[in-house]
View 1 (cartoon, helix red, strand yellow):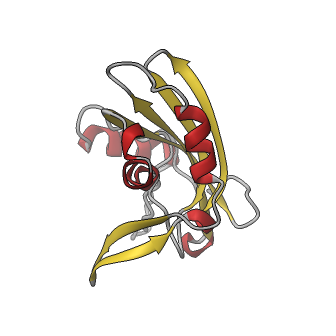
View 2: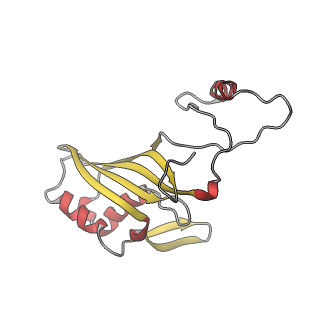
Length: 164
């Protein structure tokens, strides 16, 4: 999973608070290679108002995209009920992910890769986009990809405005 939209909520104590530029610089000095802070904001939205996530999920097939895969996957995600197993604090439960899929588009990137563009609920309830891959494997086992990768693109509030 890759991401362009992770948030870190923090509070600073003391009288001499650093500037946003200093905060970004100091955090970046402390982070591992490949992870970096881009912005720091004042008075951000409350995490409880976080609602939706945009992501891409690439489905890669070593021997090429199976015939009819695009249409079958579209039909799967247009169902009213799509049950997958979810691991939680209290063990494994069945979860209907269909109501948490707010938008789903499918595109062929090349002969071996299908890309899902999705907007899903990311809080109360939340849907990890990789559960879409699990749904394909469970409900369309012949279309289970050989490899899948997810990239989180943006997060939104309940009004579907960018969350900051």
